[in-house]
Image 1 (cartoon, helix red, strand yellow):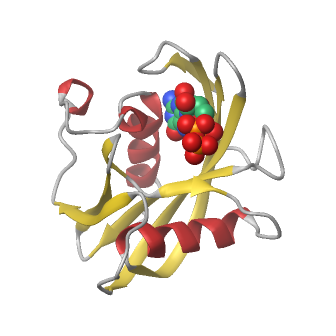
Image 2 (cartoon, protein in one colour):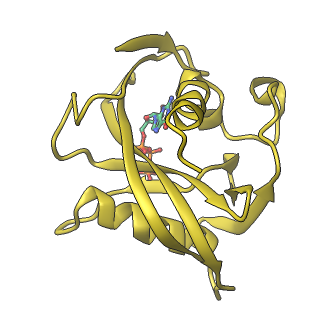
Length: 157
Ligand code: GTP
């Protein structure tokens, strides 16, 4: 288990074990790769981030991950792997999120990208993402850093 503070100074606990905080998390986040590039979305308020969101009633977390990637980027998932889970202790509530790594094999233009402006492809995620305004706060804590390292070390490609 790894513990750190997020952009808003809330405590975050991250683990690469199998669902350590909840078997039924209500949130998902999907680190996406499309043809050797990272596939992000541009959230209208938060800025650039990997796609994700809330698990809907009657849906599994993995189904939510697949749906959110399509809604926010138009991406079709070829392969998806659970990599870990994190818990944020917010002032009002606790958020538990599954993190997935997904390989995208097709990007289809959508009529709407919901609360985002749609897909953005990046060859690299800058090391100084924390200090760059156009990136979302959810990209600005240890979750991104540790998950990217985990993906690299586990040879997901
Ligand atoms: P809506 O109901 O969609 O308007 O969302 P909300 O703003 O209430 O957000 P949500 O329930 O997703 O999250 C509640 C709070 O948890 C946010 O305001 C953040 O402080 C925190 N939070 C949510 N997701 C993350 C995340 O991925 N990383 C970090 N560090 N904090 C998060």
